[in-house]
Every structure is written in C-alpha cells, then in structure tokens.
Length: 239
Image: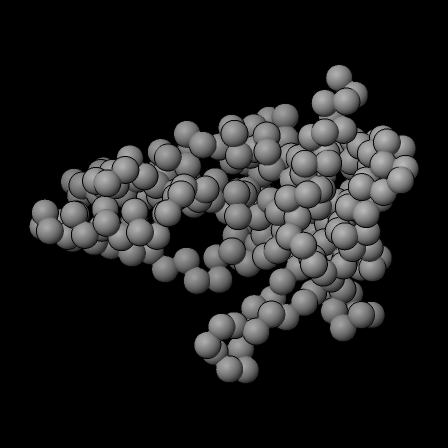
C-alpha cells in the first residue's frame, strides 16, 4: 500500500528531534520536514518514500554509515565531552523505519536479558526492584560497561540481529560496515568497532548484545553452582 508506506516514512521523519544537527552533506531534518509539509507535500512525500525505500534496499550504503563527529559537553563535567556521530537526515529516516521493526521483534529478548530499554519510568522502577532485592538479602552485582558502547564487536551485533529480526539484518550489516567519520570538517577516520552514539539504531543494537551477555553470564555462573538472577521489568513490585 503506497499511501501506508508514505505515512510510515513521514512518521519516522517526524520522530527526529527538532533542531537536529546536519550530517556531512549539510541537509537538516527541518528541511525534509518543510518539504513534506509545504505546498507540494504530496509530491515530496512520494519522493521521500522512494528515497527511503532505496536506502533500506541498500542502494546507497555510504549514506547510511558516513557520520560527522560532534563533541557534546558532558553535564557537570567541565572540559569533558561526549562524541556524537551525526548521520545524514535521509539515512536517519530509513533507520527509524528499520528501528520500528527491530524494536517490535526485540521486546521479548530485552525482557529475557533484563534490558529496560523502552520501559516507561525505567530508572524509578529499576531502583524499586533493586531495593526489594537488597531488603530480601540478595547480593547485588553491577557490571561495568563503560566505553562498551564504543567498543562492542560489530560481528556480535549482527549475530543478534540475525537471530532476532532477519528481515532487518541486511540493512544493519550495511550500517555497520566500517564507518567513515568526518572530523573537523575535512579529516576522515574509519571506525570499525562499536555502535555510533547518536545513531537511531545504536541503543537497540547495543541492548540486544547486552541481553545476550547477561543471559550468558547467568548460564556460566550456574555451571559453577552460583545462582544469579537478572532484575527484569516484570520484577518491579510497583509495575
């Protein structure tokens, strides 16, 4: 259904934050929004839907993986910055369409691996569940995943997507090819590991890998006679 596809693409475009920074080409999300809301909106929606369809089919993999590096100041940490990869506006629309499919397929996998991504009021609910576990006498173990977002093995990411959502896997593979990252406007460096902070797909892709890691950790401990329980969204006593 052409009309339904166009509606899906436009919804994905509108989910991008207002004022999103431009990618390497300089195109901004707001410009795309202006086109689909302008006097020739019908024609613009048709063109946008065709572009996104082509990107999802792999017509232009370079567009999906080339990002511009931006440094965002860390709150409350003077002089420290968080690297953010700013992708192309059209590629990000395609990624949000793919994300819709991937998130739907990943829900149960997130729950099984104690990933709270997408859960409403997750911080309060997780804190509540931790409090109950502590009061019951459980030892609480935290896993340090500092910098894991930037270092996760991309082959592990693809393996999880293959398992969870095979239809989206080819597109994810294109997105995870070595990433050309434009630094200071001219210099290019290739990034071959980690998921890019700022990419619409990254949090979900990382969550899938962490879900597998968590479950593998529980299984490994069990072989040594150690019982480990993952705190899952359903364990929130106030849920």
